[in-house]
Length: 253
Image (cartoon, rainbow, N blue to C red; front, top):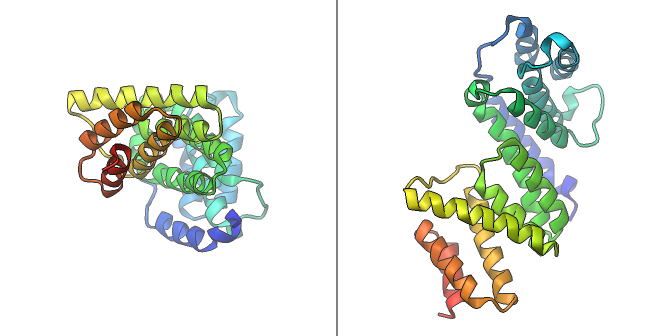
């Protein structure tokens, strides 16, 4: 099954959902009012072009706003290509690239917080890609997609976990286990402090990660590690049916 064919209805739904989420932020710098106007008028190609021109000027080299608009416009090129005069090879990849640059320049995080709903739409779409590749057993591509998402939200432990599992499945076991252990250390610390929270965008892939990783451990003859991991997973997320089922599988119940 090819991703593009599978995507047509999903992209339409994504475009509708995105239109229901407006640009929340006030224009931080009045020089960028034109970008706001072009974006809200759905002139995305013009907005992206003008935002790129801003980003190339020394005067605005430290400003995050042009990169925010480029990320949002390339997302629109992904879900609504008919609104653009040109075709792009991989506009979602470009959206993630500019979202990453935006996060780096938005040092205080004010613009990110006020536009998080919009940026989460980009993250959700990228996650759809990553999960598709993982389910299709194209683990190298899945890992690459998860890595791009992690650059945009580097503190999302769920994505780091799933990137690690994808690496393991792609036979990059050393790198994969390093990422999985990093994620597990963070999750254990959160559980110990009592501040673990379900991320509404990426929680489902954490479940998938626990299942995939413990399946790997069982296959590698590391049953005790698998049991320890699933015991922790059930402690962290006690009400999930998939984890209950995997727990029974790991313990041979």
